Length: 36
View 1 (tube, rainbow, N blue to C red):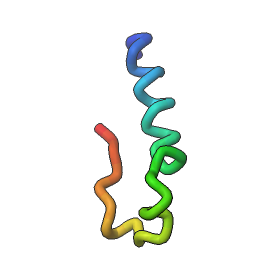
View 2: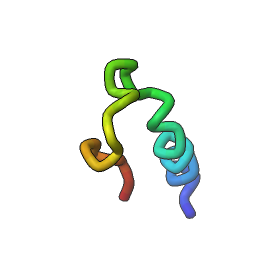
View 3: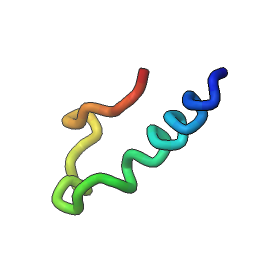
View 4: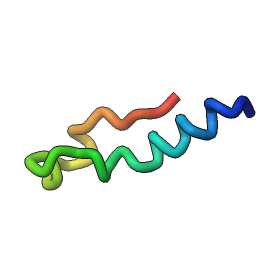
């Protein structure tokens, strides 16, 4: 794994924490979830 891949994994792991508050009650099936 390249060093930059580890940083990207951390960013993806915390995507829910960066959701705007108005989206907190949006069903996961209505969201585009980041990933590779």
